[in-house]
Image (cartoon, rainbow, N blue to C red; front, side, top):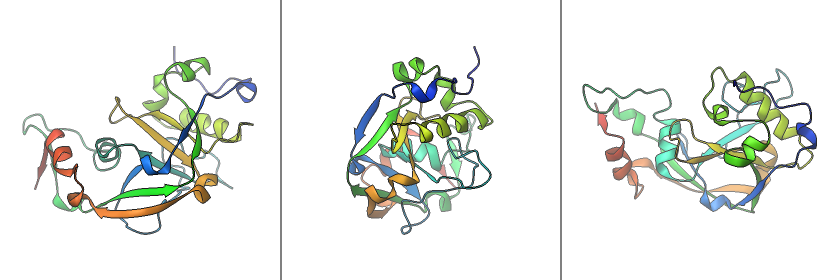
Amino acid sequence: MTLTTPGRHFASATLTTKEISPSTLLRISRYDTGEPYFGRSGGNRFDDPRKRGRYGTCYFGFDLHCAFAETVLHDEVADLELGGFPLVTTELERYVLSFTGRPLNVAVLHGVPLKNLGGDGALSTVVPYDIPQQWSAAVYRHRQHVDGFLYMSRHLNTSEALVLFDRAAPRLELSAAAPFRDHPAAARVLRDFNILPR
C-alpha cells in the first residue's frame, strides 16, 4: 500500500504527544548565530507546502550521529570501493548547536501512533516530498496545536528526529555553538561513518 495524504477525519483524530526538553536537541549548522532557524523554502520533507503565508520549520536530532547523517551526509553516498564517505574538509567546518528553554509538546509520527493515523514508515522516506508536506500541514492545523512532531530519520533509520513549527520559537533558544571537531562525540561519528577527509 502506498502512503497517501492524511484522511479526511485526521483533524478529529487524537495525536499521541510527548514532552521534549530543548536541552535534548542538537543541530549541525554552518552558522553559530541566528539559530534555531525556521526555514520557509518549501524544499524540505516537512516544510509547509503552500506557496504563500508559509509556516517555518526547523529540524533537529537527539544525538550527533543523527544530526550528522541528516545534514553533512544528506546528499552523500558511501563509496564502497574506498570504504567510506570521501568528504572535502570544508564539509566538516560546521557548528554543533545545543539549546535551552521550556518543554515542547510534540506529536509522535512513527510506530503505532503513525499507523493509527493511517500512515506508515514511508513518511520518512518517500520522494518527492509532496505527501510528507501534506502530513506536516495537517499536524500544524490540528486542534491540539502541537509544537512539531517526532519522526524516524531517513538517513539514520534507527534514530528519532524532530521537526518544529515556528510557533515553537519562543520556547527555545540557542545555548551553545561549538565547532564540530571540538564536540566530544565527533571523533566517534567520523569513525563510525568511515569519513575519508580529502
